[in-house]
Image (cartoon, rainbow, N blue to C red; front, side, top):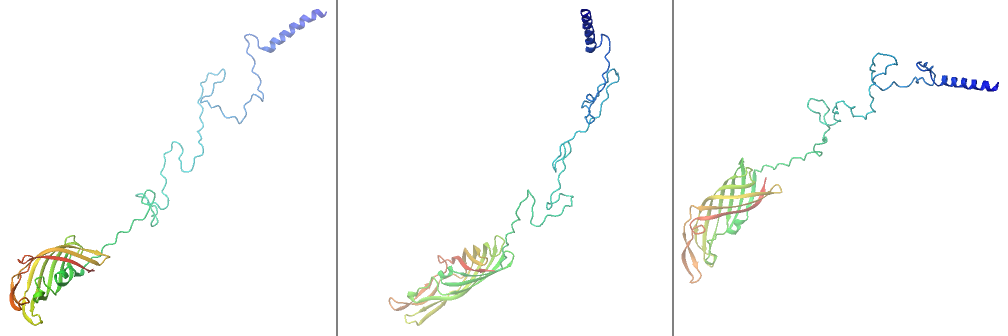
Length: 305
């Protein structure tokens, strides 16, 4: 009995195993029942593919699904998102507005970036216009004269000078023979200032002077012998320059040439100490070579206002 049941049990177990392992040939397996473990969670995002796969057994074409708009990370302030056209930021307070804009004006003394950051230097002070100059000619002392000059700029670069002179000696006198000279004179000049500023820089002047000079001869005891007039009228030109220091102190120098219209020899009686007799001798004509042509020099200091 037991040996007959054992084969039957083996056959039954084999049939049950084949049934559990899979469907028979040609049969469609039944769809498994959905369970909670196979259902997608409700919060799961949709598939990222652009098209949805067709259902099994369906012949309808796949429909494109709308794609969600891409999200970008939070941008920093002042930076546009990708693809957007950058807009110029408005200038900060105090910058000069571009043409056509109504930004407020910058505060006084403020300059935006890219400009000169320091206030402009003040313009240099203008030199005052000088109209009057008073000078004392030092070099005339070497030729026996004390002379001063008063100059006035009357129109633009033109000026007029007048200079009184006191003559206490003359190069033609001879004190060993008792012959001396003295007198006074007056000079005038009409000048033009080359640089256009009166009483500054270079000048060119026309010169005219007249002197009333007298020669005296005396005996050894001081008794007068003779007085001889020897006037001189000189005309010429002078070129030079004047510099101003400290706003008023003036130094003027020049060099020129003059001609004496009354240059001639004049006789004079004098005492000869060799033989104790009076003799007559000539007073030479003026000029470097006795021809009336002489040099005109100037070295003067003073003030200009």
